[in-house]
Structures are given as structure tokens and as C-alpha cells.
Length: 254
Image (cartoon, rainbow, N blue to C red; front, side):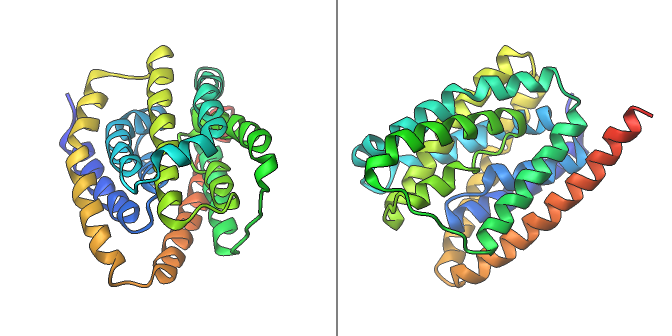
């Protein structure tokens, strides 16, 4: 049975995460995991994230009119990012969960600092196949360990100079296949439960409501302002997770 406290927290988290995704086209997994892992364990947070992430990213990947062309360019990233998630998820059974939650904090810190610094790199077309495959492998392992899809996959998509609509659609494609592969891996390692699956389905509605709100905000609020607020918030959450979860990890062995 799911307690009402967890339901209220999850609904609030996915409204916030949906708003972020509606404005920027990304951020639902990062925001939801960062907030949920403050209150619950990382594998449960990953499980609850699955349905909202999968459905909203199917939606995002299907709009924009660039699906076929974008798929041809980014298939190595998608293939290796989804194909290596099970390796990262294996660590959920081998490494202390507090340590992996702290690792999620590190990922959020790095992701925030890179975006706040405006760091960008360019990948030439002739190198996209090789670099996409390598970064896809790294992305998949990190996703399996932490549930975060963005590092370094989103940086790669920015580096191949996709136009704005194609970039948002490509992020949806990456997050869609990664969510599906993560769900399969969590099932393989017995981390999925009926209660978490039910709560994940329940959280789809607030995530969609948040996305609709976010899309309206996008037309009124300067994106640069919103991005700064978002990434400073993720930076603070990342530092919090790193400090608190590492403290739990250290105390666990004392």
C-alpha cells in the first residue's frame, strides 16, 4: 500500500519536473530524481520516474517533423546509450545505494556547472559515428547507476549543431529509449514493484499538467533566466545529495 505522504510528494515533484520539461524540453528525470531521492531510495525513485518519463518523451520525440533525419544522425548514441544501461544498473545490486545517490549528486553538480558556464564543444560530422558511440556507452552506464539521462548525451546533441526543434526532438528520442532500457534493467534486477508501478502511472497526469504549464511559461519568461534558476537549483540539490548521502554512506560503515 502506498502511503499518502509519498503520493503527495511524488505528485508535487512531477508537477515541478513537468514544468521544467515544458520550458526547456529536458529536466524531468534530473528534477524528479533529485527531489525524490531526498525522501526515498534511488531505485524506488527511478521506478516511479519511468511512466511519466517514457510517455512525455514519446510525445516529445514524435513532434517537430525531424524524426527520420535526426534518427539517421544520432542512432549510434541511441543504440549504445540504451544498450549499456544494464551495465550501470548492475551496480545497483553491488554498490551501497547511499553511494550511488551521492553519485547522482555529483552528476547534477557537473551538469549544472557545465550549463551555467556555457561550456560548448563542436563535433565534426565525420566524427559523429565514433564519438556518438563512445559517449553513448558512457551515458548508458551513468543512466543505469543514477537514473540521469543527460550527461554526456545532451552535450553531444548540442555539439553536433542540431537546430532548436531538432535538438528538442533528439533529446526526446534519447530520453525515450533510455527510459525504456532503464525500465527493462530495473525489472531484470528485481527493483520494480507493483506499488511503485502504480504510483508511476499516477504521476503521469501531474507531469503532463506541468508540461502544459511550462509551455505557457516558455512564451512569457526569458529562457536564459529560467535556465539560470533551474541549474542553480540543481546545483544546490546536487551538493545536498552529495553531502547527505555520503554522510549516510560513511555512517553505514562505522
